[in-house]
Length: 328
Image (tube, rainbow, N blue to C red; front, side, top):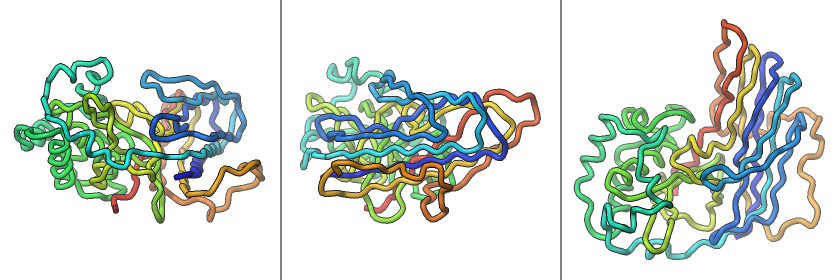
């Protein structure tokens, strides 16, 4: 499937801010299941971009804006062809041996450990204990864990944030795909199955946001993509951006700035199938023109930072919560 992804982010400030340091992780990599045919990034105010790979192999676009501004607009556009395995479940139909030699591997051992948003707590320990002793194939374990996660959480927006730890989501009993992925990771790691977080996009009807799912390790097949929010394996509708231990490793945007201002973030994501990549395209026309309200699909609730009453210093920029819809 050939897909065009347009990811717009707009950050607005009540007063001028400056000295921005900003990271973007919106580049879909080319691997055995997808091919990035084109990627373009536009920033207003414009700034030179430095590209590097982080410790998990994800591409990061980094830029600085020293001058004062009150609005930052970012548009990342990609053309990606997906060609996923039509039967990924078969790759997990192998005996599950927790703690086996195949798990003690440089590629997987880090994904058996607690992470910043998937750390141990009394609530989480109780949830993992309720799973019982895993048995059967890795596929059986994945299905059992997914069923428990979907019984523990109800999909609901606006009750958690981008920085909500899994223990809090579990206490609330509700959350979005980011929270489902975190609880699934915690459960997998708790029973000895390496699993990692995937940040990406999904082609679906209606309102679209960045999506989150997981990858499970299966020896010798490697990583297999599974979506615990929907209870399905990833299809050609899924586009991967990056992987990490949890959301904190792969946020679509992360940065700091200085100033005494309230910050508001608006996010719009559009994923659509196309027949071919246009020979020439320019999706950043009228960059200086004001954005119309109709052009923004609000993918998460607007939230406003509290105004600081102390000395101005570096402020952490808001993140985009990943909340792709739960419907299959």
